[in-house]
Amino acid sequence: MATLDFKVVLEPDPAGGYVVLCPSLPGCYSQGDSVDQALANIREAIELCIEDMRAHEEPLSDC
Image (tube, rainbow, N blue to C red; front, side):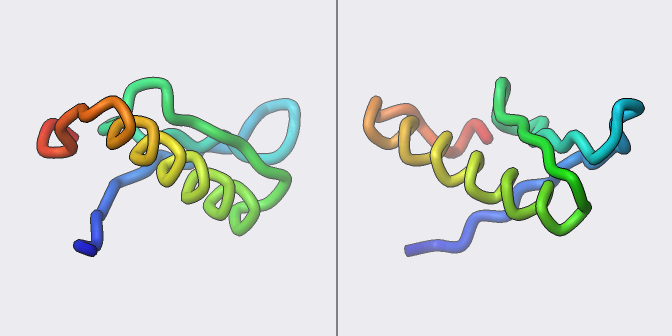
């Protein structure tokens, strides 16, 4: 299986913790109390988005 590389945007949340999103995958975002947790959570969210795209036979080349 090929390795896919996605850029993410990580920002501090004024309420605490961090918000992170993947601009290449609309609607793919997450959060975490620490940078490490937020990055782990977005990695899981990306994997789920890709799994869903494959299940619906949507092309990953648009990402």
